[in-house]
Image (cartoon, rainbow, N blue to C red; front, side):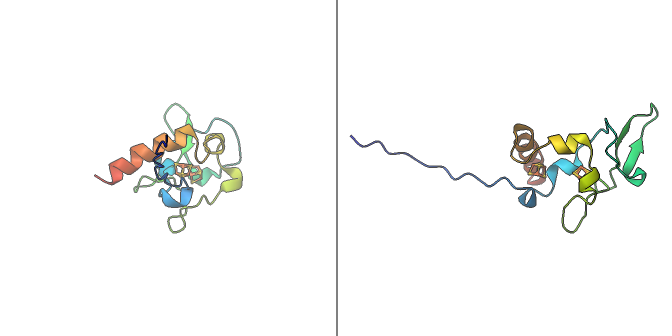
Length: 101
Ligand code: SF4
Ligand code: SF4
């Protein structure tokens, strides 16, 4: 007996094809990794997060290349947020469905 197997195409998960989705999320700064102060937003309680500009993206994101300009100093959360991880896939699914509406 022959069992037909249908192979579904799986889209490649790359930062370069998702318009830097996760760089428009709120990124709390929970430890000192050397983020330059010009990219830090401090709220009324003293909590620090990455500054986001009017377009919604992190101010440290290069708008042309969609790459992080402070990669060596990026916050801990950005280091933990790995390309292709569960969180990454969720973020892409949520943001890209929003962008396509
Ligand atoms: S880590 Fe994931 S969500 Fe973030 S830019 Fe890369 S592919 Fe997109
Ligand atoms: S610090 Fe870099 S990796 Fe983190 S959100 Fe900003 S641009 Fe993206």
